[in-house]
Image 1: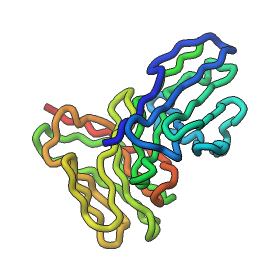
Image 2 (image 1 turned 90 degrees about the horizontal axis):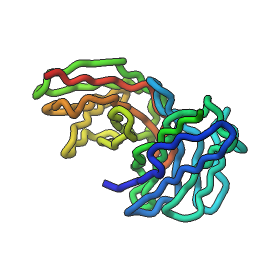
Image 3 (image 1 turned 135 degrees about the vertical axis):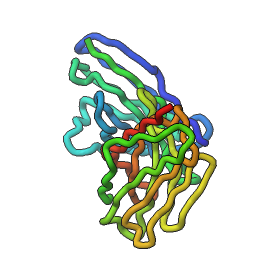
Length: 116
Length: 109
């Protein structure tokens, strides 16, 4: 199946700093990528839909100025958590549509963010 | 997208078939049924999906009732590595996934 990577896999940062997470589709082109957040013992919560070459669409309750999304190419989307606080500590997961076989989403391995 | 209902948890003996049910009574005609699983601290893994016909691949079988209001994921010979949370999702192809709470499957030696 298609492969989606994320970098870094784990990051620890101080409160008030910004953290960038990369999501790459390795063997396919993705016009659309999605970002999710998962707190311990909870399900995945969709944060935003990232479209190549256009602005991301955010789910209700997700602050677009805090979670900056850039989808500059067909294989790369980035999520930047700005001015991170301890409550932003979570597992962040991206997924991508294969633009050819659009009906299936493939997920990255996730990024564990810990804000001290 | 339609809401799904799954049992919170299930156990299955190693080597036996695991049958995971999902109710999606408000599914619309153009919504697919997808199954993913998530092993602890990993990203979800695609298993299978279907529209109205039963589907089978190397991982599992998907049985969809004729009225499409429910489905069952079948893992034919469960192994310890199949212990995971299994998510049933219905959506129109190309749209976002909204995850429910899923079923935590524990395969017992």
